[in-house]
Length: 390
Image 1 (cartoon, one colour):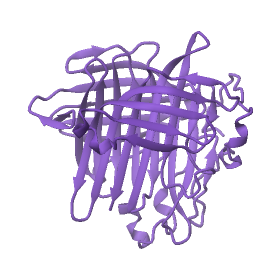
Image 2 (cartoon, helix red, strand yellow; image 1 turned 180 degrees about the horizontal axis):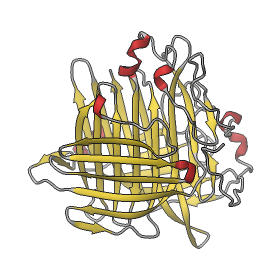
Image 3 (cartoon, one colour; image 1 turned 45 degrees about the vertical axis):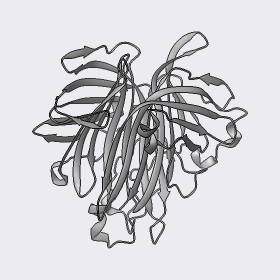
């Protein structure tokens, strides 16, 4: 396809003793032109590159609501985690149908403080890229914020810039001081893409999707937090998340990730992972659990998250909380020790959201499909624990 850049570098496949734990449906197949066919049916599965058409409003009966309600029920966002030596940034532009959002969350690794800027705007003023190809743009701008993505993934390139000032929450509390952040990044994809279309419950014709693409990138550019330049060195890594779907009225998801470089056999090499548990109707066949390497990936099976204590009790327990993430085959055995978090809580008549973005230190290991073990002790981890009741 003229829309997708094929790398000339060798891309070794990982197939080994643990591959039997990966369902065939998790193996990437050639990507159709559109994620929605001419009859409004969604294509589910795992795919090897970006879709050239992703018009989710054309999906037939994704929920039990009338078709004209699709616009209000659809959630779209593009987000990126950028992992630097001394800080980790989460940059988001989001359209939730009812309203849009710019959000920047910055974790200062030196102080372990979390700074969150979260500004709403009208949905009609929020732009989410129709695809991730040919310069398509995701962008939202307010008087105090601007987040912009320019997508050229047919060339393995992504450009991200933004800023935020004004009201800031520090460690989940509103402060009168107003830190600022600005950044301008060029991201170069170095892994194979992970493109997954997952069936969710709640459609009268089994046609409710959650689509997610996540890729590993190396990073160049700059980030300035509160007037201080943060180094963007040769180890800076990022994972971009393109996310589109119809969430059920009652939903919960768990997520943990890291990105950058890891000491593998005495050499610092590119490495990242994604682990998610959501409302997939078949966790074995449809999930987005994966290890990213340079030029290759290795799939992971479904995982479960347990917490001691629950994330919501973190502040009441003197800042103590650990997440345990495991599978059934000893491919995933991780602990995320929470050092700090941002709590976004909204409890109203028609909507309840409990959303925790966490930062901390990883401990434990992952195995690839050959059984090779990767020790992650000491790496910075980011996670989410989100519950929706709409």
